[in-house]
Image (cartoon, rainbow, N blue to C red):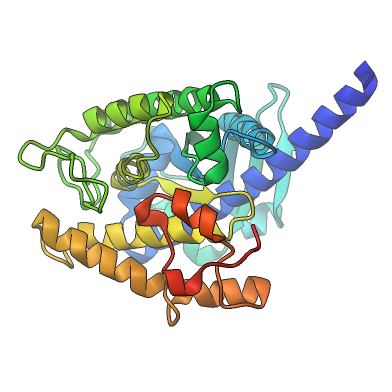
Length: 352
């Protein structure tokens, strides 16, 4: 491949990756803006204007085979989002949506607001960006975490020289650094913004599964200690600990951040992870009590039901593929972490 062809391919890949990332990012932000207004919590929106909108992408891609390139594209796209902002303006002033690129290279997405939302947003107080939204931007603060969970990651972890397991470690270390930096800014916001649910973030929110007997529940680590330990384990290729995903998304949620999750096709692995996330968030709200083993059992029961023959996940799968069956064969099921495994009655398909 000559230099010109390589440039064209890189431009093509980067354009596709960024366009998909920015679409998902803006959609996630607008959902959270609408939710904040519905909850009558304008301080959340004021937070995003002051220190940016924390946007976490949770990847389940492996670091072996074709998914390496997908993960690299995703990493590039998330980096590009740091140079992307959303500007709100009344619909009557500038009309429809538009995208502008400034001389500095920053991309600004202009979002028109109806009169009601413009009036609500314009009354925000306590922001250095003033109470009027004309000319004010919300910038994205992206944080990417990745954990390969399929059979390809098992191979990459087990056989030296196969795949690029170090890529996962590099991405996660960068994601943790971004989370810590955002947390430091979050703590300094005046007036303070209430944290979500996980009040003091003092302890890692541990879900006890069949592989978690090693966890010492009498002295749970802080969430930062837990994440650092889990990143070390993941970088050594010794584990596929889903607690890494749980800790990272709970931190993001506590700081009013937006969340996205995907795998290769955003279907099977993604549905397993999304179900786990929803169950953990429900447990975090105290719906299953606060004793560790009590809520852990409740979480496991809930995710089995949601993923089971009558659950919502299998119906989504049927709409996507025409079959009420997850596309995990027997070998693939054996390599998935316990908390991401589908019920045996809904798996076993030979399609990979």
